[in-house]
Image (cartoon, rainbow, N blue to C red; front, side, top):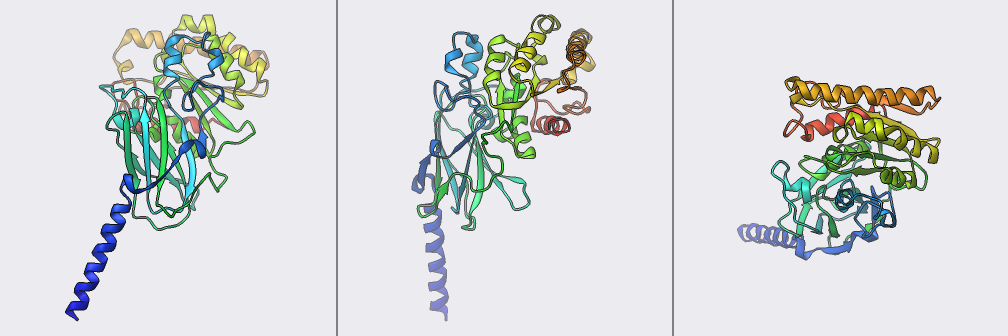
Length: 362
């Protein structure tokens, strides 16, 4: 009996070690993510697969915006597999760092799965160690077919991404028609600032555009450009090309009242002329914590919001009924606890942002 017990324990140890070894990144079977489904990309004619702006407009787009367009913010890969483990290998462009944002958000990859209740559940994050990275995001699962979404780096570019599964497992494009790329205009486009781009989420899946995508089950195209959402005509021109009729404009932290007077009406009019059926959501400034004390900035931002509201009212007077105005008071909550530095959102801030915007977006 004792010999049998020892044999059984030994066998279990062998199986455990064998399985653990099989689920190391280097022992898994990898597929280039280009063979799966990419979400969040509004243009096909980009200069590389994981960049965000159309190459034929490069000469019209400011260099600062073009450079930020190389960041893979909002991009995600949808797939299905029956693997007991999921791994990733990814290469970033710059190995970028910032002093107020986790590297997992800047250049990590995180994974969610879709459960039978229709909700997406977080599974794990690949922690970056340099330009070339690998990580097992989840392991020791039951071998059943599941739906996945993997979110790409927010503040670095992605040069290459591979998805790893067990050597005998399948790996396919999505098998469920939830949060997938569609041929119609179901996608949501968000044009905005560093906050829209993802500053300062702890991991890519926590930027508010991605949270909204999971909440509404719709693809979201993230055109967030840190410090540079200044309503350039070149960006309006680009937005006009995207297959969407749901457009969120969250630009005000990067503009001034005078910029809005000079550019906002023309910017929105360009979009409406190209997309008469489009729903435009005009988002006010969030109520940043420092505004409680900085009297000069509250004066400036209040003026900016008033100009923004006057432009909204002008469109309404012109019988544009698909223009919606979203006040900023509730975007990040009212307890002053939702930012990293008084401006950029924590995960808490992004969750609040998404919940508030989802009250309006249709």
